Image (cartoon, rainbow, N blue to C red; front, side, top):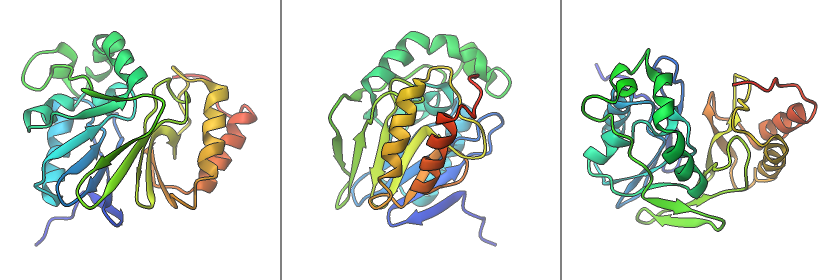
Length: 239
C-alpha cells in the first residue's frame, strides 16, 4: 500500500506540508523547478527538520534552496539539517537575519518540550544557521530552472523582516497571514500589518492561492477580512 503523501499540491510546481510537530503546526512550502527546488521555512529544530527533509525527498531529489519567512523559531530552527544536506543558499529579509542573530539563542527555550536537544544547543543539527543571502527593499527573482520565484517584502507587519515568496499562482506569506488562530503581535507593527494585508487583498489575480504560516491555504478575500478585523481591534495584542 502506498503511504499517503504529507504534501498538499497547490497546483503547478507548488506544494505545502502542514507539519504535525507539537507546538509547531507550521506550513512548509516546496516549489520545484527543473534544476533546483525551494523550501519555504525549516521548522523548529533537528527532529522537525529531519521530518520535513524526508518529506521533501519524497517529491524531489534536486538541490535545495531555503527561504525563511521571518525570525521566529518555528520557521528557521531547522536550517542546520538542510545545511548538512548541502544547502548553501538560505534567504531571508535583512531585518530577519539581524533579528535571528540577536534573539536566536534566547528563543531556544521555546522548544524545550518538543526539541530538547535544540533547546540545549547540544547534538547534531542544533547550531543556529543564519541566512546567507538577504532581500532588502527590492524583490529578488530566483531561477529554479524553467521556473522563477520572487522573494519580496511589503514592509513591516508580523515582524520587521517578513519575507513573501511568490510562485506561479501561489504566495507563501509566512505569519503575515494566519488561518485558524489569532495573529501574534509580539514583534508586530499593527498599522504596518493592516497596510500589508490590504495590499495582499489586491493581489488575488496574481496569487489566487495564499499560504499562511499556520492553517489552511486561503484567498485574497481572507487577507481583506483579516485586515478589517485587525483594524477593528478584534485581536488581542499578545504572543
